[in-house]
Length: 504
Image (tube, rainbow, N blue to C red):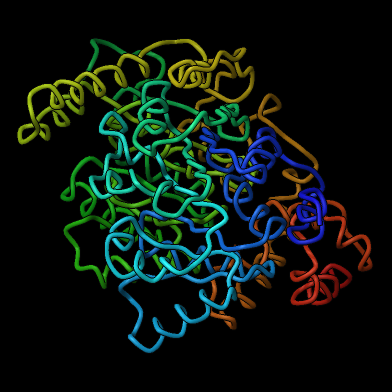
């Protein structure tokens, strides 16, 4: 089987996205590779396809235990043989999975960095690995926005398992990329930097009231009510509202809930069982909005997040890319709105008190840099791309500066739609998103997911449903031509959705 055949016959996609083919070719040839690819660019395919095509077992280093089960379920939903090893397993289940690894039963095995220093590492000692894929690789660099000390222990992975290493991240500056290569002891790696420009994300920013004398464009007087208007305009859609502190998270969640929004709070101060309950409610579409600190997000692999709102300014440019990038991973139009003020900068500076002086100053400068970027009146996509080492033309239609978007002012008028005007990005599939048929397909998906106890997007993601509603397939051949309908998805769900489309 060739990579192209696997892409089409296993995953149901017609063609590779930019950068995917080069990365896959490199790892299949046994070469180390570091790939900086935007969220939603299909990073997981760069190790899943080699796992199917190249044989053997691929180790995927994943940062969060809460993410692993979803990753394994998603792989299994397209027919890949996958498992995970972590502390949540019972001794008997662990022994069964280790025995399966030794027999070569699995194409993919997921483990956390901490686990590789403990039981998972020992279990893998007798397993022949064909590839080690390190997800969220920016966590290995202290100059990355989300440094995790446990990632430093990955330094000896290449020598330990004698396999090529693939490092994947969405938000590495050139400095961080160099640090990743060094920390993972990569040998002459292929460096692939895909475009970070995602035209389906519509970026807007508002200065909070009190920061300037007199009215100005892009200023809001009441941030809390502005957030409510944005959320109400997207009723029934999934979204995340980020806040700077735990107190503001709880206050904002209570405010939204009291006004009819299905909103839940999430922060690191909550018991782990409660955090897991909130995550599950969001993934299963039982809650529409999660109000959270930056503790929320990396463990969520949900492609149909339609909006991300920063109630308070992101703490850095890299964090902004990562957090806003959680919207629209399925490629459908989505909104990213940031509210900011100098008071937010001061708030982040207070959080650096326990850090070494040089690192504290680095974080303080990151916050100031974020403020300056939001203040500038040039293309927002262009600013973000330039920060990550890429030069692009202005977006023309995907930010408030270029397209004159004002989502807060527009919110009442577009409550039943998802476009701000004729200049907003649009495709025939995206145009079907507000149709009654699309709503019925979403309801069908939700019921099927509930019956199978999986997140709705593991049935089909929003962009696949939009394409169904636009193309109206009437038989197996036409349904299989819809992007995202692979052979396993067709067997499980194809006839059910065809029936719904005929009745629609």
